[in-house]
Image 1: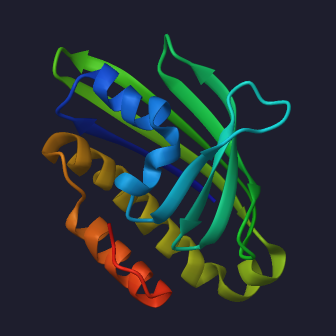
Image 2: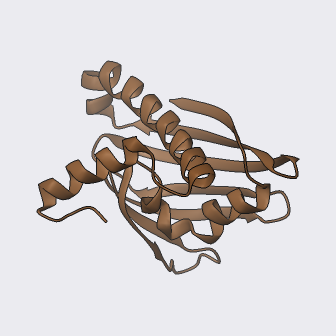
Length: 167
């Protein structure tokens, strides 16, 4: 399954890049699909990774490649929820003017065989919708300085189930 989306953000490319890469471990601040996250050191990786509690289950990621000059970041999931076999995400930030930038996210995910066969028709549209929402969440957070309504709702549901209040 491949998802490719570009969105324009009313902020400098540097601002967007800092949110995506410099604050990599803090995706839980803005992404409605990520309720908890933390940066982690990874043996053998110069970049590290992160752990996330997501709407699809707990995931663990390792950054494969970073190019700060071209503002590109690629990572893969090294621990996936049961529905996924593998996933790689590639983000690129491009300056379009002093105060606007384009953000492109390309996701390549492979569903696990049994869930893919039995529920692929249900899982794939949900994943695509969630990825689109995640990019919209990033745009909203950067432009407004606060989480989107989708993020607030996701956190409220997640932390209610965990017996804690959302941040």
